[in-house]
Each structure stands twice: as C-alpha cells, then as structure tokens.
Image 1 (cartoon, rainbow, N blue to C red):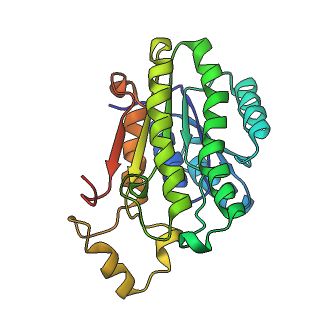
Image 2 (cartoon, helix red, strand yellow):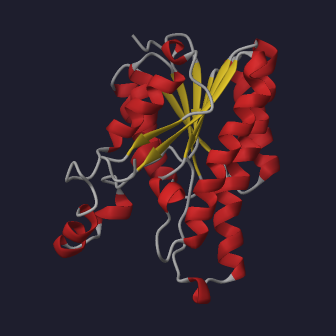
Length: 248
C-alpha cells in the first residue's frame, strides 16, 4: 500500500525536521524526491545523500519560498528536468514569536510571506503542471497552533490557520481536475524547534497532550505519505491531525 513508485515529489523545507522525514518516507515509498532549502545547503545535501545511500532518489535545490517568481521558476525547472510533478508538499515555514504588542509589522509580514504566500505560490506553480496531467496531490503542512492558537504566536498561528482555508478552497477548485488538496496539522514534534526545551518546559508542554509525548517527525511524514498516495484518492479538503490528542 501507499506505493509512490514512478512518481516525482517536491518537498519544500526538506533539509531538516518534518520536511526531511517526509522526503525520506516518500523516497522509501518509491518517489523521486526534490527537497528544497533556503539557507542550510549542507543539511539539504546531507538529507539528499542519505536518501540516495538508502537506494532512493533525491536531489536538493535552493528555493526561497518567500519569492513567488522563484517558486514558479524552480518548479518549472524540476518538471522540465524530471518530466512530471505528482506530489507537492508545502512544508517550508518559519516562526517569529512575540506577544501582540511587541510583534513588529515586518516580522508578521515575513512569517506570512514564507508560511502562507510561499505555500500558495508553490501550489499555483505545481497545480498548473498537475492540471495538464489531470492528477496530482498537494499537501500543506499546517499546525495544531493554527486550530487552537497559542499565546505569543499570533503570526505563526495566523499563517497556519490560513493554510487550512487555502486547503479547502483549492480542494474545491481542482477536484474536477483529479487533484486532491489536503493538510496535516502536527502538534508538538521532536525537531530543532523543541530540542532546546528544558525538562520543565517539556513537562509543562505535554500536560495538554493525552498521549503524553511529542511526535516523531516520521509519524507526521507517514500521514503526508498517505495523503500523497493513490489510496487517498477520495480524500480532499481534509486536515489530518497528528497531535497526540492535543486538539480534537
């Protein structure tokens, strides 16, 4: 089940965390993966090399998703080189946290530029290709914070909540073209963003998680792989929660 053999997948923000795990899982299922990065070329190269060593197919490409023209150009180049684009995972994201009265306009704009506008730009470019093929999978990486909010994360929550609206709108727009559009909404995940927490902070964080632990990045990646598969062909406009019961 969930075979992606012969398919091409592009994962934005694929050098680490959820993005890297997603690239690895999609490659394990047979997809040829293009993972993008914006700053850490070494980490991206390492991620692609690890997939190739494991008998998968992957390459790393630089892309600043805040640049809409770069999104269009990069996806066009991938399709020209590899011949197709079957799966697009819009994962690239940043967080600049601050209480509202300390949140600067430029920081708010920067978060939305990457997390929201960048994801939409990539989806626009990817869907153009998928429409010609009359099939495709788009998966946005949202967040539990987009559903329940979090103090000090107004910008991040706004961007991730907006992606859920984008998911539903695009699902309605392109269902007739054989394209499904879904989202995953992770809770707390073992990534660089949580690795710096103290034991006290971690314990406090997990109080609201019924399963009592953080997620592994591969658990989120597995949800993406399902939504990218043929088996999920009748699932669209859905946000799959991978949050340990934190929000129901």
